[in-house]
Length: 108
Image (cartoon, rainbow, N blue to C red; front, side, top):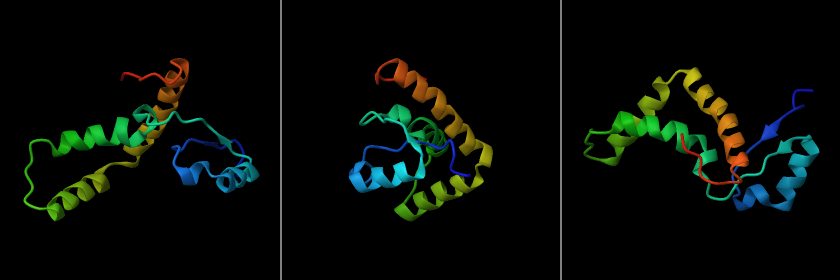
């Protein structure tokens, strides 16, 4: 079955922790990993995506929101699939480090 062995890590937002959502995920047979509240260590956007995006945008000046949106969208589309895959793969290592530190902040 395609859903066998699925591990799910998502934040602790109310819709994700609602009884109905938990029941649905359990019916899929997925293992839901614990996520420490407010942990930037476990958000790929925080530890992978945004650091690269900030570097790309750094030093540039934009006259309006539309130009910023265009620059960000363009940069996101230019990234190879491997860039996003790397962020997801690094999540496994960071999750392990976070668990071993009992939720304490994980340095790069």
